[in-house]
Length: 369
Image (cartoon, rainbow, N blue to C red; front, side, top):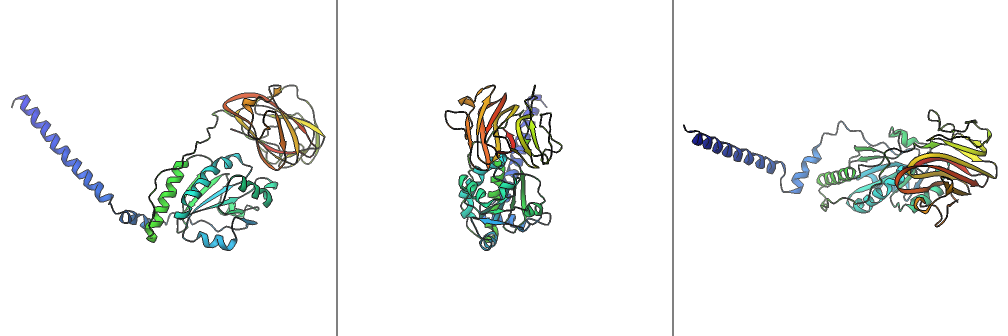
């Protein structure tokens, strides 16, 4: 047989075989994806859930905000529930809130219930008035329960802020995410579980597969880690550079350092050492550090005036944080919580000095982005 004819026959056989395989492929797709939505979702309601845990009860709750205990119990029934474990002075938690509040607006009427589980890191976060101010500031309309003794935190076997658990309409935890990020993935899980709920209950659901579009915060690859001022919190990660060191439950006079190291903080003035913070006892004092980041935040309590210096100069406007008075380098601390003092477009290294005026000023931590 001539090679041209042989080649032509082989090529023809390949084409016929290919058409046959494609036909089988598209037939299988039609069988796996029927056009009837209820039929399609019917398989979702038959998932074997024996490997999933049920969401625990909310226990040890000190206060219910935006709801009552009785109303919340009724609201949970038959809903897809997103449990958001957070605390209001945690910058990582705060960065997730625009997404969570947007999901509440978008999906609440379709069967999603969001419950904020406020599990405090610091003592002042146990005050319901402080938490009420925070939920108002961030536009939180969904129920928030105050887990002051961390009993619900323990019931979820949790160790992180923030953390999101999503339970389906039967109460099984189907998704678990630690920290920031994965917002699109999380929203797709919400959509999937709402579809599953609709299929199971026979409820008609609007098909809306668009995703919330919010610009995500981009962390610096190399940045200073969180710095703790409390001797208990700083165990195994002590970054107090002052030679006087931590002295539990004592008031210590800290002296001006000769040199400073990266990722450490140094104090001057008289400071009382607590397990979770330090309190300025003298009328004035200062905090100095060499850091690398594009964003710097502090968590504080009590009233004070802070003057922010960067590399020996008044804080330039291009680095000015959102809580700095416009056109100045001054931060007025008026309530317990988190304050943003540096906010820039890119990461860089700087020597920051904070001159504090106001005895009783209490500082808990620096966080960086």
